Length: 197
Image (tube, helix red, strand yellow):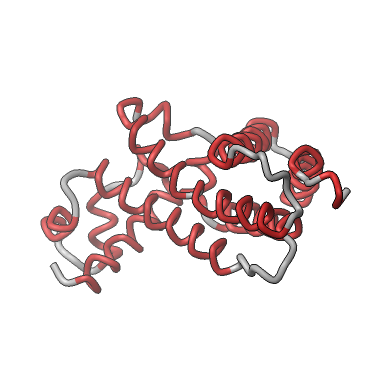
């Protein structure tokens, strides 16, 4: 299948799954929106579940690419960490598939997908490690940080905040951003090199 047609199918799938959710989105609707036959959709994927995964994976990769573009080694790493947090909150507000993934909605709907969800979680891990490493090199973060565990802890804290936000209504994106920034201030105080505090 040519890439342009597959991209069109994935865009239609992203819209349908974002609007209706995994269970209510139909492959017929996705095919109609993409301007292809239903059978053509199945040339791009093995099943509705696989199509859903490809759509979510594509959205997460776009988020990771957006965050990676923002990493500038001339900028202090603690400022970058805050900027990446702001960018993540803004992206999630506009991309329901990623928002619902981070909120844990799909975990209950697709319980056999733990490994796939972990793979998506790991995609976002790389840029956090990169910023931590940069901060260590700049002397802004402690030299004794365990990069992998610290990056995981930072991601877990952000995911916990997003989960809280989704379950309580959160008070809007501005409140989520303030909460995220307050959490990062606490984290950054713990990882900053003592001379920069």
